[in-house]
Image (tube, rainbow, N blue to C red):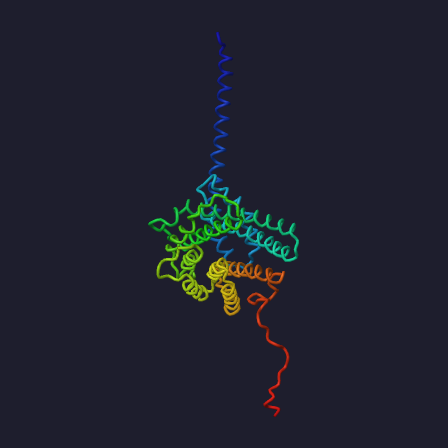
Length: 348
């Protein structure tokens, strides 16, 4: 027979096991609640304060570093609360731009090596450039996937509910991410699984945005797709006229991102003179009127991207990038003579 003392010991052990399980499960529940609360607070703070603060600055390098450094922290809260897909669109778009900047440096190195007849250096630069473009494309495609997770696939029969200005901004950022992802995949010559119909979806999704509110960007997005894809331009439309009209809206709003799409479309088509004209127009507009304060970062991004185009053209022609203070000028500009001239009629 089992003694009473033995039964009591067995019961005590069982009770200890149960209490331990309750305590630890309770701690886990408390931790999960704390993590979820922290995640919700972080998401709300980032959306209400961090993003607007960054958009009001023009330090692109700091914005790039912030997106790469804080993305794992902010996005990991999706493990304990609802996925921060809106923030992820911004983070991955910005992270992709960081890789584009690195790719540009190797592209310029490649151009210089070709010009100096150094084939090994040129090949190494091209390989490095493509590696960065692949990562840029992957990050930007992730931004596109986060956009579709939050709002649904762009290009459908109905537009998503974009109640706030922040929602509309994220929608536009996601559309640009899709275009950039496809472009970088093509430039890298390395398939990374980006659907080729993404450009058509972007073109249709742009209609969901107010063209006047967003600095002419929705029409610029549509016209860029028309200009770059054969057969995409609707009958009766003219992509270049639309891009010029979009530029005027951006210049009026002092957020001149349309200039980038205009110049990229022309660059892809090999229209060097149009690219130069857009860069000159942008340089002049920035000098005449400062950026809109609440979107200073976007205007700075436009200037950076156009400077990158200028650097490509300068390097290909001269072996070096755009001179300091020379943005908006080109190597083949006709320079005014400094020699003093005398009107002979006055002397006679």
